[in-house]
Length: 150
Image (cartoon, rainbow, N blue to C red; front, side):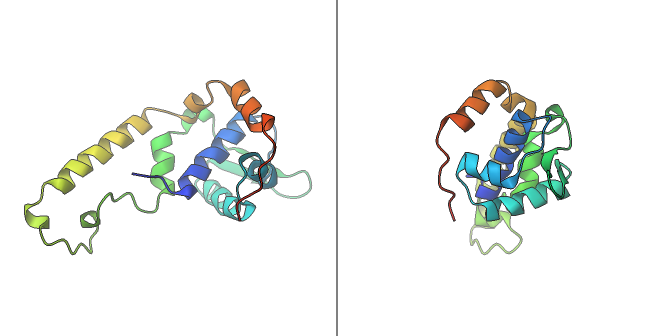
């Protein structure tokens, strides 16, 4: 399974905000740090706000920050809420056209594997990703700002 860029960016935003706790961050600075598009990031930030992971402050001097402590943000939950479709194969969907579905064991095996993956992700929080915030800050600011992908 490969995470969508939306989920990837969601985790990156949460990590950035976790490293910079205590101050407001802007979409522009996060986009510059990661070298990603501000337009894509706006959608991600909007969704993270709707999901109550972040809070935004409008106006001059505004920005965003985490709405919860990092220890309260489970990685599995974030991915479940940001991935559009976690179906590993076509037969997981309601509109399956698989000809061997009735006799095939693959869906149950893949479903078990997906459940195991989420069990592992659910055992970690954003706080686990921020174990060495100083190192993350160094990496984010040590490299020259990349050109955002448009």
